[in-house]
Amino acid sequence: MSLKFIDLCCGIGGFHQALSKMDHECVLACDIDKNCREIYEINYNVKPDVDLCKLDIESIPDFDILCAGFPCQPFSKAGSQSGFKDSRGNIFFDICKIIDFHKPKYIILENVRNLVSHDGGKTFNIILSTLEDLNYDVKHIILNALYFSVPQHRERILIMCKRKDIGCIPELPKFTKKRVSLESIIDKTNQVNNLTDKLNASRIIWNDFLLILSDNKIHVPKFPIWTDIWDSDVSDKFYNMYKSTVNKNKQFFEDNSDILQNWLEESRCNELWKGSVRKLEWQTGTDNGTLDETLWSPRGSGIRAKKIDYSPTLVAMCSMIPIYGPYSRHLTPRECARLQSFPESYILHKDPKVNYKQFGNAVNVKMISWCVSFLINWY
Image 1 (cartoon, rainbow, N blue to C red):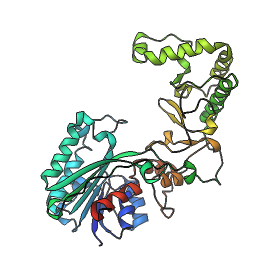
Image 2: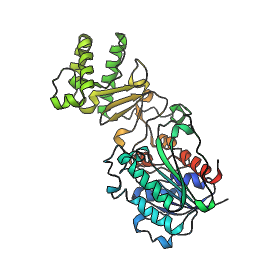
Image 3: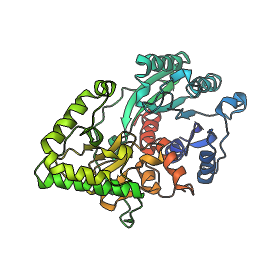
Image 4: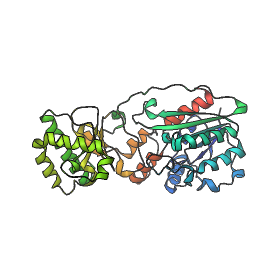
């Protein structure tokens, strides 16, 4: 059965990918971002409208399914979490106006997991009750890309709605993570180091540190390794905020200063090794190793190293693109596309930085495919 859908806050078309593969037809798309609109038209031959808030609701073509990955920034832990006080948070109510007028059979909404707990759950309860008042049976589920054999830890809340006069949504299933190695998406023909001088310097310096620990049979600490506070006084305010981390770091350096003092002094002489790169979070689950054996990311809070079994959540920031240790390079835009379950036929934007932002904001295609199958076909 072929249905018609509208793709609101469409981004680069994660919903479109899932629905069109099931022979459903897009009759309208919309996104505020110019680059997203351009690449959406190139890939799907549909020209998105610019502003959802300015759509002429009555002129929207008839449709059966409304999809929207409405803005997550007002609810994300990475943002200000202003919720409905943020103008982007109010887009939800603009979507509801379209729902109220057109009364589609099905609705699928996607957002960050933090939406559930935002403002003590009040925001989410308003969303659910509003949809129910519009005459929909509503169910929500937190899904992880790992549930669908995609090597990315990406948790999202999916809200699925079915108009009450056509039936109820069945009970939601329980999922388990299906681990697939990150190597399944890696382009092994591309082994060119593309790191900045600063990141290469940080890689070398931290590898030296990790090898020193290994040679001396010292396990890498599981707490954040914050070298700037090893031998420095901190303010009372700073100490009160990070008491446990400060105490553990000072004790660690005191216990091992005889083997780490020279490394610390020489490393600090490197003009490139400054700022947050002087902090390391070793989250590999192993006692020792090097960055070249991990997937590591430069972050505002420091360098974070994890096992090479799956990627952390892709984000819309070029400065935080994960680095594949064995090749000492960032994940490529095509590899990020694979982490969002986009097909090889998907045409990438010509600017890599735009690609990284777009895939960080995209909905995962396999995640949406499951929702469509479950909601419409009782998969």
